[in-house]
Image 1 (tube, rainbow, N blue to C red):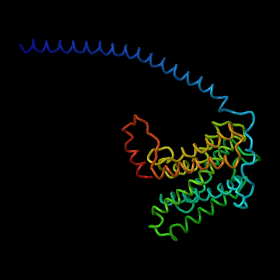
Image 2 (cartoon, rainbow, N blue to C red):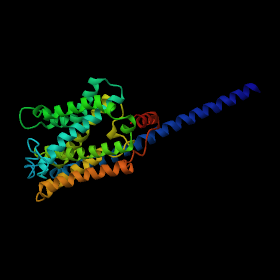
Image 3 (cartoon, rainbow, N blue to C red):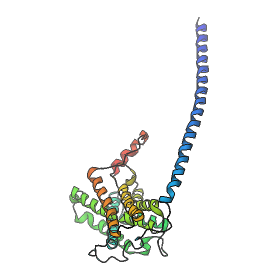
Image 4 (tube, rainbow, N blue to C red):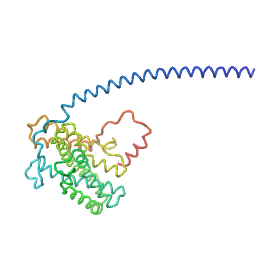
Length: 318
């Protein structure tokens, strides 16, 4: 009886294995059919995107001539703000923002435990990294590929701001004042004003070279955020502008660059001063709303839970 029962069990197992094998083959067959359907559907989708890209190219790609009033964006040397001219203000904000960004880079590096040299390097990279990347991509007029080599006053400002921040910021002001809400708000406003100027400078650098609206906005984003990206990589922390744990930043610069580019390319009759004012105001206003309301971009809906530890680290480190 035991032998017969064992034989029956073996027969059942063989039947199950046979059925399972047939089912696997059937699933494999259906998988191939579905894979072919997906392949065809995605192929059509990406081909459609290709045609859309070529349709948009004449409107947002290279231009035969640069928009008017983009040749002399800033004065050569800053003298006074009393003229109320955009060219004078932009030169001031460009130099002023270099110091503000260097200050923030030194603080971030100091909190990470870097020494004097490390803090100064990170401060300078934060201040001039975006413009350096832009210059390496498109160059500038003359023999030098990046702006701070052609105009060393930017390097001087970044170095002075870095050294003063390293030696005097933690000693002159108490920790309570440095970490207060009022100080955070003041630094946010300074950063927003600097960002408003940088987004215009980055966009104009592309437009004056006939690179078109799309590259103008892209290079403006690189100008505004490139230094911060390099800073975060140096400090081995999540890149601020690429994660949803921080409020809107790079997006506000893109919005300001888009406003400047739209008026420069499609509304050339608008004065240079008004064009710059509208672009800078857009960036500053959006940054203000972002830190005031904690505005963030939406996250990808299908987040991999295996990266949960990384997300928690990102939230902790910022």
